[in-house]
Image (cartoon, rainbow, N blue to C red; front, side):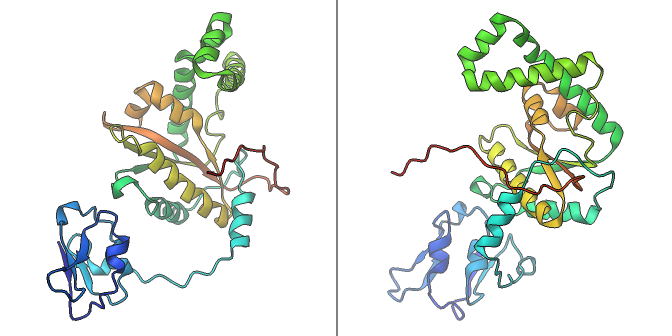
Length: 290
């Protein structure tokens, strides 16, 4: 699976240091510091060994050499990076302008290059652009959230139960959604509530049995958010969709997911209708140094 060209190898040990599963080591019997690949069954096919080798001495059967690209000398200042991250806002008002397919594909590229637990890379994506499908899914999400629990917050007993189980802060958040959804349902204003008329939605889904699927999808979505901001696009997390998908299997079925997978991230994508002109202050957080 892994071969080392000993004529090229400089014995620097970089592959030994970066391998997450301790596949590489030095040949103690040779006594020359020679690097060898052993315990190959541990390999998670991350490609770090090939990418780090300064002598291009390592080959991996599962990852052909032509699939690797030389990295440019990236020079982005910490100040620019900070400004980009702090300027990101959740966008809920979009221009009536489609997002070109090539830009969506660039966002997906950023997403699939995000880290995944044990390098599983088992998260996949769905791009929703069809207005009818978005509308149908929107109505389904609202009904699932309402009938799946929010409607019970209209009673004292229901509110007391939520406070006991989830705490006062979560009860406050749920009550806000209760009032919003109840009002919009009664006034037949559900349309545009979930996806905010965004021209596209990128949905990430993963394996249910993997406890880190939610983290894998979230990291991929964050990668896409950052690149989208740099492109001049706006994004917003569709929490209603991911919540509904965990309440009812109808959501996954509508999206064509197999029974062993579920939705763990969803991003609205589009050109912002407005430009935010000020950075928004944040709450002070408890920070502990240990």
